[in-house]
Length: 587
Picture 1: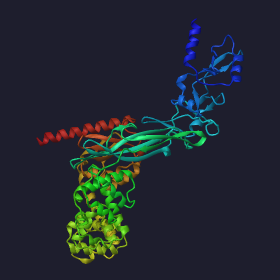
Picture 2: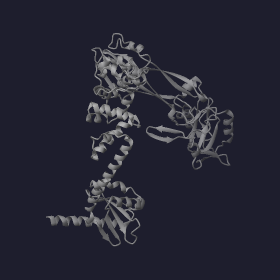
Picture 3: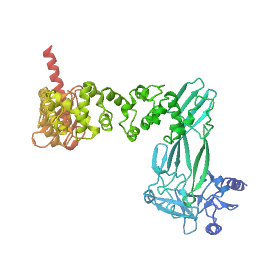
Picture 4: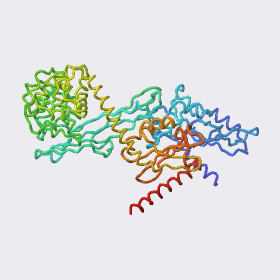
């Protein structure tokens, strides 16, 4: 009775894999009364095959729907162990070979063992949260007519992640709201670009309220995730790909976008005048807000300043944007928008106007104020982070003359102002006569800049050497000798470079740190081998501790050499005693 009840329970639980009748008959013939497993068939399905037991938990998530729709699918099962027949036709448990895995293929009714490293070399990766790991894949995936993948295998392929933005308007009691979503489809697939089900995720990153009282409110960079029914409706189409694997393609039904009777009435028709410049739905939607706040933007687009218009539109979703300080809201004409006579830009071609950025507007205003003609070359020269600082130092006449001079130099326009600014600062540091025209405007700026750079480097090195030697002299009393080891401080920068090369380390870069009083380098010498590198120490005068103690090529140290460890402890005690004596004498 118990046995029959158990069989009935297993009938209800396990009905999954189908095996051809001849395979089942073969297995029946090989079983005996000593078998440790049972074969049970129910309506063409069975649960145990050659010693392996499968249950409903192995079924794919969409198993039932695929069965109803007649869609082919396959699963190759990864097995931790396998059964074999002994000479008495009894099933015995056997583990796979080292670095091997056992796979059951329901398509062919076969069990085979493969080398795990060989499978992993196919480069199939999967992700579980933030953890990335390699995942096994059926080795017959490419050649088999049935596309099988191992149980729980979720493959990742970077080229199969598709992202897009959608935006739409939604009516509210207070007016109308713009909602923008970033939608991502993550397709799981092997490196040879098969596509399976696409997982869709949505993030609402922008929300703008156009209220009935003619005010607006914007919420950008929204962090919350939304399901597919939060604001947009998706239509899923199944399309067939390689080897009859299907993927999900989603189209969007945007909600009602009628703006009649709302704050946006009249603006939506403007897209017909944009001549296809802005085709992205999100940018079109944000443009409505920009047009509401700055009506002159319509004239900016009509005049062909597309780069400025796009920058200004994007500034509405950038919380850290300072464009509000550059462009005044509510302006209605090009003159108010640029704050200059717009005829000053007539020398620019249509292509040059389209390439202008919002950050060019302050530069243009300053050049117009100095009565400088606006050209492409002059704008490119002035797009330098030193421009405002340089313009503050000189009057309008010198600015005009300098730009004319820089335009003649055979240096890239984007770099020439930075080189000239650096040259002027170096000349002032070297106390050159800045009233001399040949100094102020050298014939060859590149050669003059190289010359002043060399002089400044020499002066800096000379000054650094003097400060280094002065600081090193303060540590002469730290010299110490114990048995065959003696220690003294580095005295010059040249000596620091020499020992850095001798010890094959990076201590040559510590000169600035030593001059600042934050460190000091000492050399420990074994007097039995004075020319051989022994140990180099870095001492911190603030903490009165040894920061590091290293031998040649940064090897060894106090942890591995008891002799140098004992020496360092004695040296630190020696320094401490000398300081205490000095305090007593001073008292």
